[in-house]
Image (cartoon, rainbow, N blue to C red; front, side, top):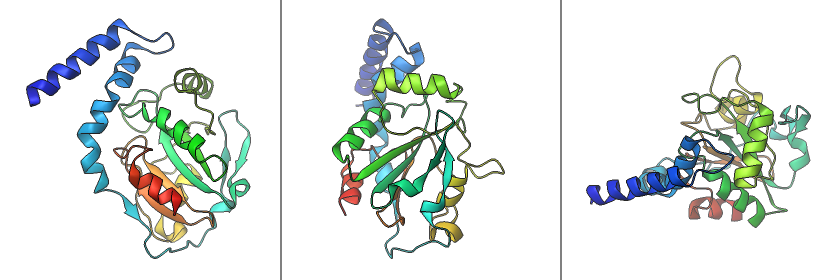
Length: 218
């Protein structure tokens, strides 16, 4: 079984090298090609790492009071999303999970009007997002057709430089229950229509996974 998987991955990598996309590096082309294999190998473990706010605890700081800057450098307030669910995701261009951009876009379109996906590019894991904001925006649009809001690149891990939105997401005294920082790129936090943080999904849970869809439909 392991040999068959290795052969399959080898074929996919070779195909990616032969069909390098114009706006991607070889590494990015390979990662996009083998993304299904990455998700297949990590999916079962991911389902065990989902965290849920079962008692609907509210935080001491209102989600809608949070502000940040979008990828164009403009002020961005979450108050505009009152009455909608919000899925916040830390992203990167050179990660094995970068292929999730495609399904994040599909998810955004599937629940258009009731859900807003918001991406937070970050270079917190193994230098997998070294581009500047302009290059990140171009990469996402050209290669994955991303139309959902992207924020200016920032720090999502706990530190003095942590983006204030992620300070809220990762501090139980602020959001009501969750201390979980992103374990890697493409971890997801779901906020409901009342501004309550309801779920944390690790990177190994695909945006179109049944658990994510079910949480959005609640």
